[in-house]
Image (cartoon, rainbow, N blue to C red; front, side, top):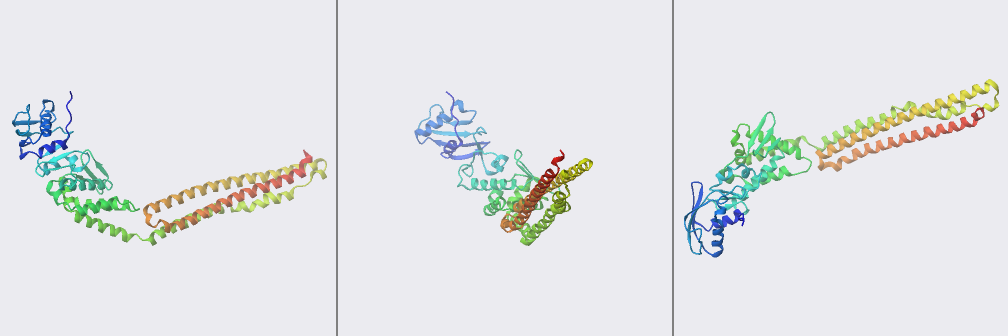
Length: 400
């Protein structure tokens, strides 16, 4: 019959029933007077030979094959299998495990000298460690690289700054939880200035830790959270001082003026051709002559003159159509560029998005107006051409 995997939570319940608990030679030792039948059954299961590899335990006193209520056992528990959890004599030993220190993997643990376990969120060590894990997670967004395997945060500025997630129990207990939570909130806030806050945070960390030994950098950061917050606040004040609605509005106005000129150019580029519409499509109709009134060579000659006139008008309409379509494509590109600039400003300054909308609405409306104008030009051109064509046919069909 396969043995059951006993969770660390049940094992810790047994540890807490032991008296005179001490840590000797890498093992948790103590005495246990079996209080009830449930504990006797559990101890018998735990001391079964099939569990020896997973839960190594030396029975210094007592009969593991005959566990009864009231029996006294002197037990020395070794380190359980890693997948089950960690048993550490003190916080310093626990934090030497980089996965536990950084929170990159979920691991159950129990610290003997403080009698605290990872699943007890109301206890001091689990609570503080959870805050540090959240702080590390918040710093991930500010770093250039987060090496989860080696529990290391990497910042790239003028050079490379490695910050291994290493600290001891003294640093953990000295960490200001309130400031840590405040910084976590600031770094996770998404209001359009997230990138700027991350950049300010990374700069503050690099300035604060660049002169420290690599293995002590994270500990210095945790000890100096008040200094770190002040550096962050000072940096953000400088950013806020350089930011104003007027500057952003001037930037948006510059975009409006630039693209307004480009939009107007879509018409000015074909302005000369627009003046030729009535000449080449309607006025030409007056150049046709009725071939029915002519005979012989004069009749044939006039027919070819009429054909040449209508052919010229047709060629003009083709070229004007191509020019109008080209300007339409130019408008399409300009509208895409306007939309790109609008989104960029909104992402950087989401809090004043509504106040910038009117500037871009004007540009969009002007582009739409010009687009309608191009379609009107296209329509007039071809309506006038077909009017001329109908006149041509009425005066020239007798020659065919």
